[in-house]
Amino acid sequence: MMSSRAQPETVVVARPPSSVRRVGRLEPAALAGVMSRDVAIFGRYWKATTFSSIVQPTIYLLAFGLGFEKFAPHLLHVSYVPYVATGVVATAVLFSSAFPGMFNTFIRWQFQRTYDAMLAAPVDVEELITAEMLWVSLRAGVYGVAPLLVGFAFGLAPEWGMLLVPLIGFVTGFGFVGFGVTVAAVAKTIDNFNYITSAVLTPMFLVAGTFFPVSSLPVGVRQVAQVNPLYHCVQLVRDASLGSLGTADLGHAAVLLAFALLMWRLAISQLGRRLID
Amino acid sequence: MGEACGSVLASAERGNAEPPYSVRVPDERDQTVPPAISLRGVTKRFGAITAVNGLDLEVPAGVCFGLLGPNGAGKSTTMRMLTAQALADEGEIAVLGFELPRESKQSRLEMGVVPQLDNLDVELTCRQILTVFARLYRVPRGERPAAVARALEIANLAPRADTIVRELSGGMRRRLLVARGLIHSPRLVLLDEPTVGLDPQVRQELWSLIDGLRAGGVTVLMSTHYIEEAERLADTVAVMSAGRIIAQGTPAELVRAHAGEQVLEVYGPPEHLAQVSELASEHGWASRRSGPAVAIMRAESLDGLAPEGVRRPANLEDAFVALTGEEIE
Figure (tube, rainbow over the protein chains, first blue to last red):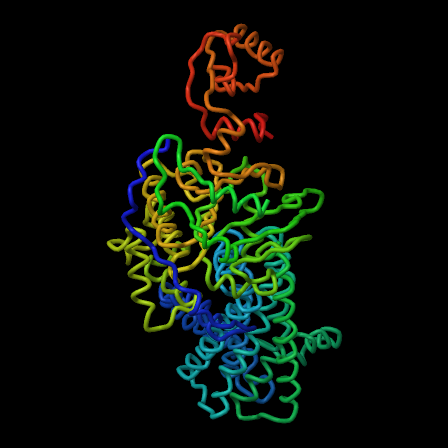
């Protein structure tokens, strides 16, 4: 029973406790550590992401733009290509942040238990969720520019204001990934995401002035658009990209910032409650 | 429970037959060094279920401590409370001198965790996973490659450093989980059922790895329901049942106290076994069904009344069953 107690081959020596340093809240080292995992994973799928971020706006522009232009050559005061190209920026940001927020969170939390592993390390819930949200929204901000690049090929004119688009995409993405994380935290199963996708996200991305102006909609629907963060993202991106920034855009920016802040805290409180027993 | 622990260790006798190995017995330092883990009156409820029920537990620094108990005894919940992934409803917890949950992050910095369930990133390579965790554990940038190389070496995974986890065997994945928990040379390692579901060769490998940890001065808290594992590795074993510790001591002490020196195993057809069980209860002997036999504890004190059977030395399994009962919930 008590067989030979030979000396082990590998002796693992503990680090002396003197190397300890104090840890605080929202530490950059913890955020960077969590995000380094996202970067490592991104190294495996960046090609697919880049491919779809280019091909999707191309198809939108071809299908909607070229198809509709015959019927509605001039909506508002801009031609349809700039209109759709800027609208697709917002939808690209929405889908590249809300979906990872829902699916990645659920998979890493429930199926892969990645979050369990990380929370056993010196990372707290607030850091974990913030880092995940930062990564997704940074990516959404960068890839949100792709529709504009595609738009250039369709005749969209470059504008200095377009340099603000990654920032707008980042703030909007931060709000929507927080929304996704919150949904993942309260969803019982991954199938329940279908309710959100069909009943919330799809109408949201259509009633935002993406492909047709909100002003063409009935008054009631127009009012709904006002509380749609994506509508404010579309307006801001369009004004920045078409050189028509004005005071109204401060309001759009304020709404997006408030949305991002609200979703950040909501995501932490909702998922935090479920990550810690 | 805490006071008992110190004296138990001081008088520790290693093993049944083998002489004690001085390296395995903690010395008097334990009187002055604060315990690595201390739980006092800890209770954790999940709705109507009380998973941990007034638990008192003290793990001295530098020992390998085995938390033994049947499934559902509260071992995993206890482990999760030590990383503040579960918060106690009542009681006090201190890990490496830090008060939980307030200073939990600080204690996690110096503690490694090997979970029961595989939670590796299947899309990453061994090196990538270890590098991510080296960052999470704040290993300075310049030291990360060496820390990763060392962890790969410990886990015998150096040739697989750049293999994606999905392509590793079950044993390799388990070793990678251990390597991940050791990336920052922790002072304390929590192992939750470290060898569950592994084949004998891989178990042996992990046992030697765990033995290597405590030889290097790392405190190990290991939960297990494999009795042999606790018997081989642990300096002190605490038996947990229904959310609290019901017995604690060295494996040898527990065996002596709860199963005596010898066990008499009586084999035969079911009717015979039923008679033997009845005889045992008439005389007040502790007995249990052990597969196709009835095992009677403390066979050395049966005098001439003992039925025909095979005598063998009592082991920790006898003590464990005597303590936790035979019924499977």
